[in-house]
Amino acid sequence: MTAGVSIEVQDARCRFRHVSGNTIDALAGVDVTVQPGEFVCLVGRSGHGKSTLLRAIAGLTPLSSGIVQVGGTTVDGPSVDRGMVFQEDTVFPWMRVIDNVAFGLKNKGLSAQQATDIAKDWLQRVDLADFAASWPRELSGGMRKRVAIATVFATEAPLLLMDEPFGALDYVTRLSLYGLLTELWSRTGRTIVFVTHDIEEALILADRILVIKDGGVADDLRVSLPRPRDEERRASPEAVAITKTITRHLGLAELLDRHAGEAQK
Amino acid sequence: MRLRKFFRIGLDAPLGIFLLSVIGLALTLALWQVASELVGRYMPPPLAVLNNMIANFSASRALQGLGLPPGGYLPHLMYTVWNVTLGVSIGVAIGITTGLASWRWRMVDEVTDPIVTIFGTLPILVAAPFFLIWFGLVAFAQVSLVAFYAAVILHLYSLRASRNVDPRYRDYALTLGANDSALFRRIMVPAALPELVGGIRIAFAAAWGLAAIAELLGAQFGVGRVIVSLTAVYDVESIVSIVLLLSAFAVLLDVLVLAGRAWATRWMPREARRP
Image (cartoon, rainbow over all chains, first blue to last red; front, side, top):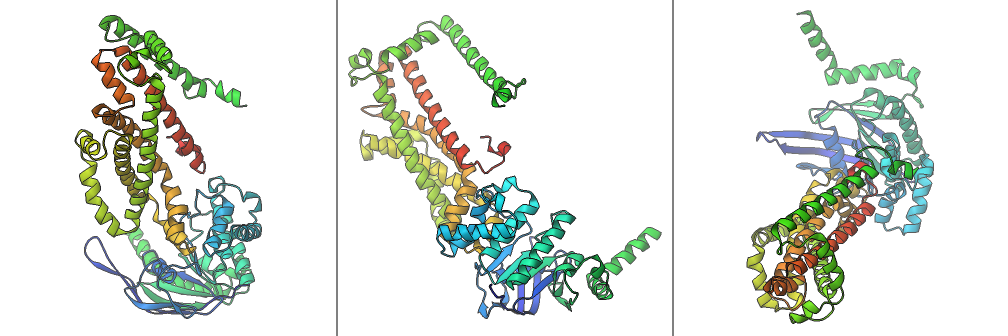
């Protein structure tokens, strides 16, 4: 079992130049601390900096200033120790399923046989053992996500970063993947940072929800609901209170009032 | 099951496509026959060309009479085919390497871009004499010429193909610990391969003309050299014969390249695999 790692983000700023010539602060001085083994969801509206923060932790997007440390080491580029599952379908279509799962392991220096053995084991855990020799095109979208999850877990990365990985999937497939992900997380103790704009998804998965707004952390909410978090638990007073807090931050109430006012006119 | 698929009715069925190809070939031969009736001596009919091919394929008195080595068309065809295959192979290796390196390192791109722009636009009739002067009337000159142009074509194709590879695959590979070598071998090359094969086919198509021109300008051997000798005696029938035989080899090589592409892109959906 691989233990998770801590994350320390200090005054992280990320400035982009827009095509119009204006500059945009995707991250405007973010300070975040994540404890080892925590499951943290970053929730917020599109364009407010969730994915930029995640990519900065992954080392894929360099910061304009500030610092990101993972397990006490400063992040200065991507690493196999920070596995990432993307929103888009990133499973390599030219590799068979087993080779996809073994890819990160081979990069870590394992022999082909060792990598294949571990990959087979992980395919078993995500219930895809029968599809080891298949091409990704032969799998459904949900199955390909399971391949991506198996791939990042197989590398034993202590930190897993997930950028709206289930956004394009149907509701039932998403529910089954939530179950798989929380099971693997509780068994392996990895630290997971999961980006979503879906409050229900965050309530099902997270120990902690960080509300990201205007490039900063607007709120830091603890979720102490027992797992598994079925419909009943998601309708509990604690869950409703969290939902209300998040929707207030997201400006949903004002948005609804405005639409209602426009409709009355 | 396969047979039923083959004999399915419709112009898009395998049998339909095959029949259309046969009709196209028959039409070409018919037009050729009519043209030969109208033009006369300088447009030999298909059957005469076929007889010429068979008669002179492995031994030809006519060629011997023109001072060419014995052995008919075959050794000349093999000489040209070998030069083209070798030249394109070298050019493909160089072009893909420099193209991918230009994608990876901006400095390489800055250095190679003006070279490719200047030399890539150089007409063959201008470049060929230089190669023949520098390297002499030997196979090396013809191979170098073919390799040079193939490298230019593949450089441009691989640079464009690598730029077209979705950056998400690169990001994903990097988060899985891929180093430069793994990124090239296991991500960029297979992802860019379908487009690269297009470049290889174009390089081959251009190479036949390049090799023939190089041989026409000065060579001891090869299809171009034979054509020069035959032109001097107005032997149109033999010229058409050897040119068609060379075309057959070109088609055969194209089929081999396409077979290689089909194998290398078997991961793609069937409809995307069409060349």
